[in-house]
Image (spheres, rainbow, N blue to C red):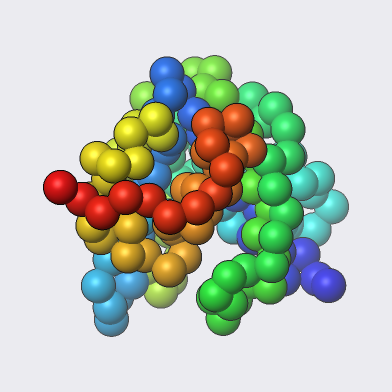
Amino acid sequence: MTARDIRYQAAVVDAGRLLLLYCVPHDEAGFWVLPGGGREAGESETACVAREVQEEASIEIAVERLLYDVPADPPDGTYRRWRTYLGRVMRGEAVPGGGEGWAELTAVRWLPLAEPAAWEQALRDDPFLHPQLLRIRAALGMEAPGPVPPAA
């Protein structure tokens, strides 16, 4: 597996809220993602995660531990695995930045992890992000992954 077969991403948690970035591909509708990407040559996994968060959200984080390592589900066409690390904000205020040639990061948001019933339907319907949100909650001891109740 090459360094780009794995997406190294951060679950940046601050006061019970999770950092999300809005990614807008040049030819598609936008969607919310965790900050992350592929490793550079000679870079450790944790250094990659910290660098990606700095580039994409302009904040410095402490990478605390691996939360989960799973096959990309559904496969996203670029990465075969997702390795998600817990990150804590050390310095800065999150603002969107960076991006690839195929997309731009245009917004940040802090999603309350303790209130999945309050998440908008678009997040619940997202086949990439929603399962990750549930895994993050489970890894943090909030509850086991499972269905989220429908929006009221």
